Length: 525
Ligand code: ATR
Image (tube, rainbow, N blue to C red; front, side, top):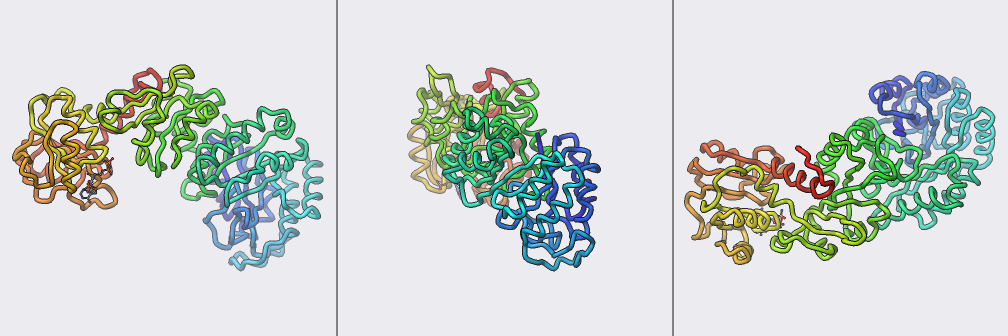
């Protein structure tokens, strides 16, 4: 289930959030720690008006709650994966001090009063933090059990993933009486793996099953935890939390429409094949959008995730646990992953970089490919490349894939680069010429100019990789950058009358090639 964490200051604001996303939601959570004091009296109305099962939650600050308490400030970051603290001292029985935001200290008694009052509204669940003072927690639990409200016992760790995660979940469940919930902050791939192993232990072990009799919620926060949010159902969690767009309630929350439309949340199960992109940083990647769209349009039971990592090896080692079918690889891991493969495609060996790892099964292991060079050639398809002159700017990893593709296509290639020695080395590897940016070998009127450096990429869009280059207007000018759509370099080329190509087509074409390697199916992106 997708659960929308409602952190509005008023009941109406929260109902608007629900309406905006209703078609995606199975459940909602109201964060009472965000409500204005004057709204707290209205908590019992909320479940009826929401028209969905509701979790009643009041978080204290240490657990990610609203620092402003009952609506004093607002939109910031409380977390449903986390809790509230200071509120403005409003009395729920009418004595609200003010809505002006004068904060008062958090108190257990106040929280307990607010939750107790809310319970008479017929909430499906109540979240009571597992470290809540027993004096207040026990009467709440008794009342909840009397009114048929299931109790979630939650804990939050913003500092990492505790070693005792499984034991803590078991303890929080109290023998299956409560729904244990944890939101923890993985800071590495090892931490992510540890959360996934704990989830598996909860779904597969005798002890875990007994504890999770009513369900459990186990989620990782932040960029390393993101996969657990998308895979929540596959990992056995009864729900995943989302925030309204622009009002993120916890680190790593996405909006319900993103989860549903981009990742296809409702279709993901334990059997779904998992793919993803390894990189650091990687959350900006457009690949999830491209690949997930392909799976859904072809009805393939798979999901593609951004995997933030500095330890790509751990993904290969835990392929079975993650049900991994293949991985895209981006900066800075394109070289590092090559030795991890059991077999290496010729293009990877020659280019010296791998952007695609395919899991060919237990017997055959992993095979490394490079689809960048194929993607690069896609927009040039049909053009008479053979025998023509090409000028390549840059001598990094991307340039190597480009030079591989161009020499394979029979072009006469010259590589120029800010650091001349790198261009010379690259040129030597591919038996072409190379040098500094104004090298003597530079052709006067190349048929094709390819820009492979990051110069001109957002946000530094003013950058010019080859200042003063005199376009004759006959060149085809290809910049691998796709943000912005038209770099300064491409604008200059276009103004001179050149045909221009940006990196977008290459991006989608290399992805289509990966898609074919991953799934055996052709997709048009
Ligand atoms: P990639 O894998 O994207 O090619 P890379 O291997 O780090 O990344 O290569 C970056 C390329 O962009 C190099 O050719 C680099 O030039 P140097 O070899 O002189 O470093 C080039 N580049 C990056 N920033 C540049 C800048 N500000 N001006 C000119 N060239 C630049």
